[in-house]
Length: 164
Image 1 (tube, rainbow, N blue to C red):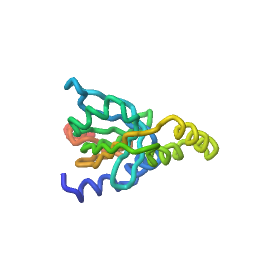
Image 2 (image 1 turned 45 degrees about the vertical axis):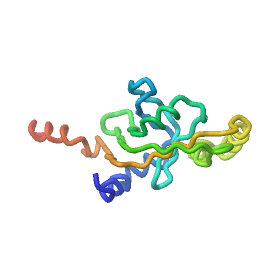
Image 3 (image 1 turned 30 degrees about the vertical axis):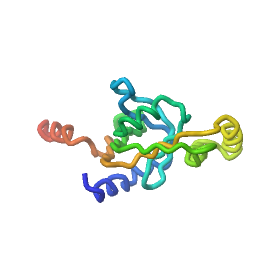
Image 4 (image 1 turned 120 degrees about the horizontal axis):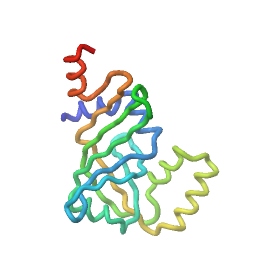
């Protein structure tokens, strides 16, 4: 997928909504033993990277260093008409930072009231002496909005054949 196609997909209003108002995603990667993993993660979208933060000693850090290719799914809606999903594939770049990853704190501010976010920041600054900053650069992206008919191609083909 070309960069302009990735940028256009990520710029769609629904995709932007998921990237900027949602704090949870599912990260898929290959574990150290070679088997697949899917884990829920908090994230922060910088406008170019999806940043996931975790303890520097988390098993996914070593696994991602060895095999940096990942997939991420961010979804919302609990009815067929309201279901939306953003699927991203990319490569993870790991950096270890002293203290707390700034995007970790920024992500908390999306879902917390200011007082709760301030208390959270105090707590995590006392908890983490180092964190891993996992920066995922999208190499492919697709936004689906099932209620609006923005569905995977194979479903659109099935619907067309069925006369829908």
